[in-house]
Image (cartoon, rainbow, N blue to C red):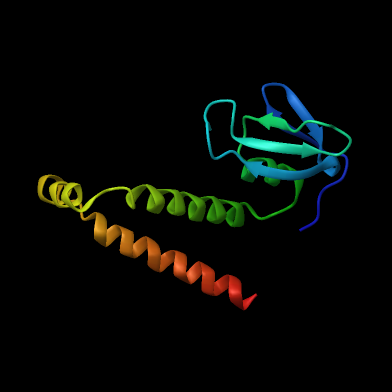
Length: 126
């Protein structure tokens, strides 16, 4: 993955940084919301910048990665987030949801784990 030089990368809300000056991108996990998606560390800037765009969208502007690859990475991150949230649903609520909505959380959680297991195996091959 090569960083395109001298490209201005939008961070949102009128903030721009040169692509070759971005040192690190860190997704915001806590207190994430509108205007708070990614922490951007920039060369020669003491404090990191807060971007309103996701790390994947910023990265897409910085480098030349096929759109499909970025979308797949974003989809896998979404699956991880969904799985983590599903783990918080207790057995009684799971039974109630299955009965009321015919939505089997256990089945979907199992399928997500299968997909993520293949991702880990694929990463180990490369």
